[in-house]
Amino acid sequence: MGAYADFHRRSIENRESFWTEEARRIHWHRPFDQVLDFSKPPFAKWFVGGQTNLCYNAIDRHLDARSDQTALVYISTETDTERRYSYRELHAAVNACAAVIQAQGVGRGDRVLIYMPMIPEAAFAMLACARLGAVHSVVFGGFAAASCATRIDDAKPKLLITADAGLRGGKAIHYKPLVDEAVSLSKHPPEKVLVINRGIDKDFSMVPGRDVDYAEALRQHGSTPVPVTWLESSEPSYILYTSGTTGKPKGVQRDTGGYAVALASSMEHIYCGKPGEAMFTTSDVGWVVGHSYIVYGPLIHGMTTILYEGLPIRPDAGIWWKIVQEQKVTVMFSSPTAARVLKKQDPAYLKKYNLSSLRHLFLAGEPLDEPTHRWIHDAIGKPVIDHYWQTETGWPILSLAPGIEKAKVKYGSPGFPVYGYDLKLLRESDATEAAPGEKGVLTIAPPLPPGCMTTVWGDDERFVNTYFRTFPKLMLYSTFDWGVRDAEGYTFILGRTDDVINVAGHRIGTREIEEAVQSHANIAEVAVVGVADSLKGQMPLAFAVVKDASKLDTEAGRKSQEKEIMDAVDHQLGAIARPQRVLFVNSLPKTRSGKLLRRSLQALAEGRDPGDLTTIEDPAALEQIRGVLKG
Ligand code: AMP
Image (cartoon, rainbow, N blue to C red):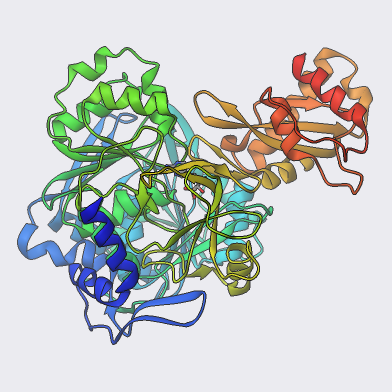
């Protein structure tokens, strides 16, 4: 690891000169005066005094050299549509969208909540906000009204942008009524709701004075040119909510200049994409991967990005490979769950298409098990690079960087610390460095590199208290992941240190699910744990104590209670958080001091040894749990 080790070392030891060089990759309207202001640790400000704009870097900057090149291809297997936008057309579409947003009274620093299916207008809206200096917050379309309302109350958006409906596997998902409910639940409702009518839902209603039809607004305002608003590098570009151990999601706040530089540099050093080539990221704009590598990263790099609406196996399991062939994709980015889904399908689909354009397949978001890594590697005959990151960081923490050095892929490992990250693997007991082969907590010595979260939206204290207090004497950012390093420096991720679970790459706090279960009137107490799942990585499992046990007397009663609880979770959080089962028990296993024995519960549910139980208050609780798990 000569070349890469040197590169990484330089990024830490000569931080300022390293990032000054990387910052040349983007356009600065005004050059920065200072590379890094770390005068108030752990808060880091990158490229201080510099002025730039994400939308300008993603679109306008390319208009001279590549105005006719395709910037965005929208492929929907839900509506059988393919639409291509050149950089010139994307510029026009984003300008028109910005004009509409501006006409609703939105300006620099105002928040705009985007709740949209995977349609080009979702990307237009994000880029249009960036153009105006407005702060977007995309909420994943699978979240329920109550989750959406929590995010509205925290971000206090002036405007909400939505569509009539999304489609999943041919089934309509009605967005507009859900938005109406979220707005009515909210304490800080947005002044306006902009609605993109796809013509899927024929019956949705518009609220007079509040709701604005996008097509009509485009006719009225779309031709007004919208100049770029230059932002100081540290001004926020967006907020993205993510789950933690409390019931309240955190608004991860991202800056402007640092993010643009980090993405631009990763496109070359990690993803090895070249301007003019195509990148296909199979995520959703509601997740961080969608922000960084469907929208901003590939466009900043002058690539063609593919925005896909649909499932990986519909019309058949060859659809993604067909896209790779037809669009001559060179960089593909997907998730371990998607790889496991494809593994279950007929392997002939992989042989049917010509994948010769593809350089690498990148996977992230959850642990990639060794057999799946090996399978997909062999199946596509291309290097498959597992890389590890978090919503908080916005780009990879651990990865191979084939743009710098072609290191061998080790199955099950996301590789080495990415340049810019001063990673430390520490023993939990005394915060000393773990030896090779020894488990430790993955931490990052601040300053966090450009691109990472700068704070929790509206709550600097929460940023410090959540992320930098794991080792009280050391101000280190905790990833809340366990890791282990082998003798060659490859790191392996061993799972979370907290009560956050990962379902098909989507991070969910068990506390949030417990609160949703508790919204059911008959629930006295509940514990939710994540249990291993061969497809989705993990699935939530709930153990519930009811108030009125007579409702569980019959099998039908039990089933109906379980269904009601699952519906409550769907309603509060969305179907992605639904427990796979709700098991009813008389009491939950706790220590004598009243602490829930969560790890033991999880171990029992996965058929493992529950560990040391000497502190348990009521051993009968555990026996009953063993019983219901067997039943
Ligand atoms: P999210 O912020 O939703 O992307 O979730 C981040 C979490 O997902 C991390 O803290 C890890 O627990 C997990 N994760 C992400 N990428 C990987 C990976 N390549 N290998 C193992 N775990 C991962």
